[in-house]
Image (tube, rainbow, N blue to C red):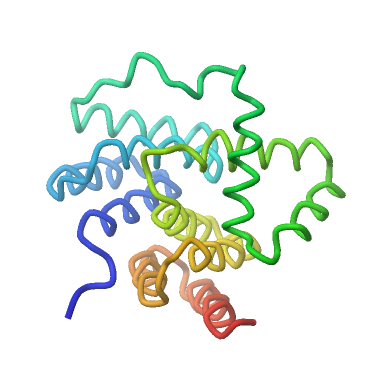
Length: 207
């Protein structure tokens, strides 16, 4: 029987979870596993960039240093998305990506976030889903599975619930989502792990 997640995807998701935890020894170990599994470097680079959205600068920078030191790979000298002249394109890209992730919940999400603050809505679309999650280099399915494990580690139930749905909307099969949750479960407090699973059951059963 074919495993729900291939080795490279599983190691990428494992690295995502450890980025959210922030342990340097665990990060070094996970980098070694990424290299052993021959995970494409571009996947790792994109995961590091998107982790900024969930884990913030401190943990993202620590993880990026572990990747640079462990892989020996230098950073690119330029990046197309460093050019702020592309803000209009980021917004278009963000609207498409966010609509895919949220499906029928997209319009209510935008309305809700605008009520919290219009700047949060604009940044979510342009910076979050457009400039970051809408980048090429890593497909949306793997991006969403990485977000699932990071929101699980961070004990963020609302975001976890949303991105469990997002993973399914991005094309993840139920067994792939369940494999991601099983991978991260040892990192979670037992009570929260049970809650995370119940959130998944709600999504799986269409609630």
